[in-house]
Image (tube, rainbow, N blue to C red; front, side, top):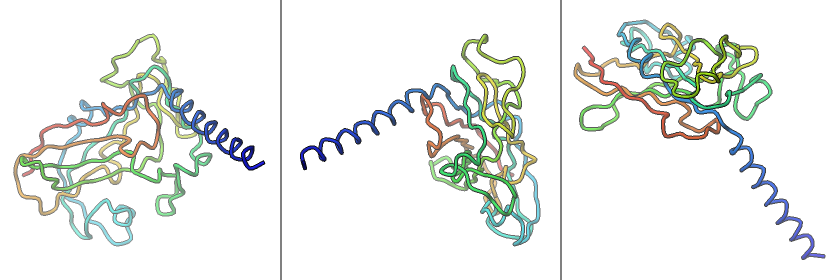
Length: 219
């Protein structure tokens, strides 16, 4: 009897492992940040914040009052052969949570991570962005796949989220938290790094192309 129970238990573990492997194998999308869109969006500005601002509550700024910000756009493209499909975030409580401050579902972990590094390879400052709406907003500039797989029109919206093959979602530099708080950072030359899906929230075919970098000068 005990041997039978042990065999059943072992069989269940094998089934679960096989199912998990199957899910990973079926993930044919490839998320990749756009260096072109990032480089074209960079600007420095000063903005003031209060303790009641969502940006402060979410840790997007390091203090209140006037803050010096390096604003940027974060674009996530799909360079894979299949669509990246999320659907309704409410159906994925393990990935999304309801944020009372912004009044929308956001990913439990950041979907975009920004960081500034000095010439010695030291981390200077960082920023993050939780995803709240992944949709087809523009053609992905760095798409290298088969053009025949790219839909002529947008497919995914905030209602049914995802990113089609050859398209990208863009978090514009005008949106809250699309910045790194550089208040107090000395003027100089740095490296700006953008990484998407750093926590492997979504299972891609590869994570090797999830980071892009560009030089940035802070004055």
